[in-house]
Image 1 (cartoon, rainbow, N blue to C red):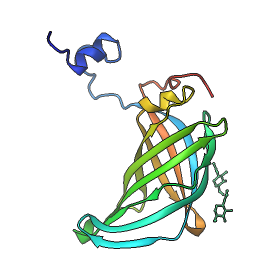
Image 2 (cartoon, protein in one colour; image 1 turned 90 degrees about the vertical axis):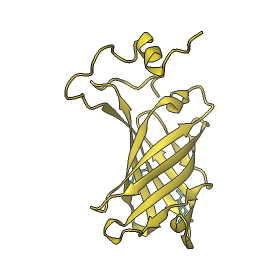
Image 3 (cartoon, protein in one colour; image 1 turned 120 degrees about the vertical axis):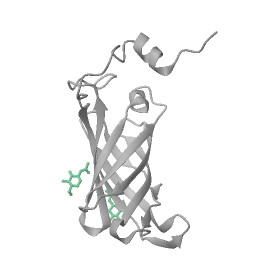
Image 4 (cartoon, rainbow, N blue to C red; image 1 turned 30 degrees about the vertical axis):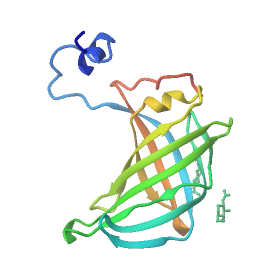
Length: 176
Ligand SMILES: *[C@@H]1O[C@H](CO)[C@@H](O)[C@H](O)[C@H]1NC(C)=O
Ligand SMILES: *[C@@H]1O[C@H](CO)[C@@H](O)[C@H](O)[C@H]1NC(C)=O
């Protein structure tokens, strides 16, 4: 049996419209997921190595809140980011963050996050979630991104959205 291509499977399931894309393609919609405040501990300057100048910062605690999930950030995980100075005019910090969320109704959600600082000083990240919770299982299947903000006192805030098909539709799964 010939294996169907991914595109033919998606077309069969009605997820992707057949035919050429509209010109120019429509940008995807977005749905706000949550904002998380993270308090980090002391920085461990691992230093310049083969992958950049690495900084390790443990997560002490945190809180997250959004329309469909809220809770606390467990005291595990952290930042393992690297500062790339290979080309001084294009210096950037590349984040590598893991967080474990506990929702107010007792589910754990693992968050794996990567991203980069931008020349104007802003920083963006993409995040993947994994959880075995039936209520939050839809989060395993979304594509999400965040905007980082620095809080005073070494804290970090990340505002997070997910992509959806235009026009904006409600995310899959039961409402929170
Ligand atoms: C988080 O940890 C910091 C440092 O230990 C502490 O000052 C702060 O009160 C804690 N916040 C929460 C919400 O537990
Ligand atoms: C994050 O911190 C800001 C500033 O202290 C606060 O206004 C906001 O409610 C906090 N959000 C969460 C989810 O903890």
